[in-house]
Length: 474
Ligand code: BGP
Image (cartoon, rainbow, N blue to C red; front, side):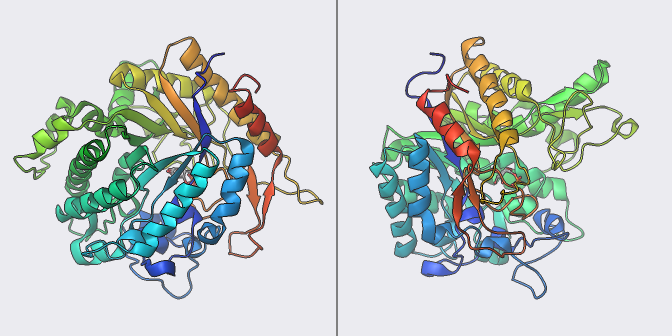
């Protein structure tokens, strides 16, 4: 058998894309509740269009999402039926600290997640909990400007301390901040940042990054103090960059672009700023305020394991305008003529997953965990309401084979694998429901119509077999 018998198979969701119930149980709004469906979503996500309240004429898919707030028991039962060993989920910050700067946490929010963890325990499913998955309480944005303000370190740390203490014994695996490098590409989503016209965007983004890195290290420290059994991970939006040609300057560009993301993980896994980043700040005249103690904070608490999402690889060139651009990607990328694309233009590259695993294992020498992977596709139920998603099975099969190769042939240490959106949910980038990833179909459309009823797809039974055979039967 290639994978160890305690390999963690499962699926992943995020609070804002699944729960809904955004004003239930004392919860208040956060940044992601304000991302509208439609063409303005990108501008809001980038912090280039202010949307700090629900506005007339827009539809906000997070409001109800897939109603998991009320249906989590049923969903967990389905995950258990597939044989999940782990379920990756996130906590909604504003369910626990509705304004973010409240002096006391909201008990109803804490109790809600406690009930989920107890339910998971019933089925022996290990929770893998993301403390902040694209989630900043709205009040912290309005009052303090989001993560660009150092004070967020205190609010986040208090929030982390509260949940780590409260769920001691129920949760062992923690991720501090989801896809931390998204901050550079979608600052409102990643950091609750809305720009003014005159802002030095680069400086603000890296300042916010510094705050998140310090906060993440402090949360790691807290988790280790509360329970030495706790395992804390960082989380990167992964996918390596290929040079379009073998021209040395294209290769150099691919290194530089990889570093944009690895910058964060270098700090979180190694406990210090890499020299190339310090040189960049100097060269680009970016003044990043750091407190005297920050160096020690970062050095004292590197993460225990490194996690990442993987959907596609990316291709770059020193002369990008010479080539056709790949569509649908947050990261500007050139179309790779050797790869097929999803219906959203993400380029499908299973070997790229193995390569990324190797690159990251070489770099960090820490256990890895693939916490998101999957195929976003339009699913069309047949006349019996059944989705025969062989395309999804095919995608996942190849990616699982690639991770097995990385373990078996290359010796990468891999703790587990959670597919993204194991139950259909709202797409982060587009707000669509029709961009589906799940093994479980949810009856809901892009405008919010539908019964929300859950139906197993063909991939449901397939993944169940994969897990039961520990990845031997694909
Ligand atoms: C990652 C996020 C997820 C998720 C996924 C798929 O960036 O961590 O929240 O949604 O990508 O992306 P999308 O929903 O845009 O297809």
